[in-house]
Amino acid sequence: MREAQEKKLTTKQYLIVASMSIALFFGAGNLIFPLHVGQLAGKNWGPAAIGFSITGVVLPLLSLLAVAITRSNGVYQIGLPVGKIFALSFMTLMQLASGPLFAAPRN
Image 1 (tube, rainbow, N blue to C red):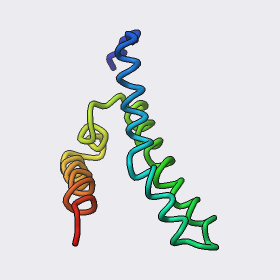
Image 2 (cartoon, rainbow, N blue to C red):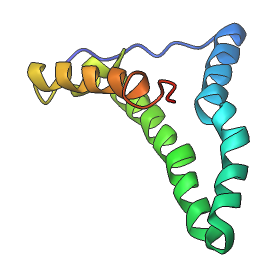
Image 3 (cartoon, rainbow, N blue to C red):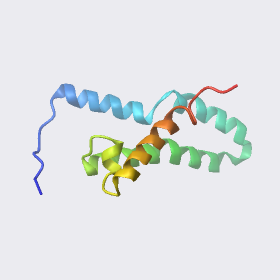
Image 4 (cartoon, rainbow, N blue to C red):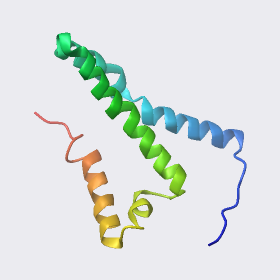
């Protein structure tokens, strides 16, 4: 197996990675949605806060770690060890989940 070369990042690259990480963890939904969830949860704010923390912090962190550990260039390469059909299906599902299935505006 070919050994990966270790490269030092430039300051500009560090800033780019840092800004992408901030965008991954702190979007507009993380600014507005927690207040709305807290209001709707009422006295059940504890479980609501735990659920929001899992979906808003833990899952993005796991995705960042998955890419860092596997050193992949994208979602397709993450799923490729399982198989080509799985990788294609997984990539397609991720694209649909981030857009048309969940994030698209609704009436």
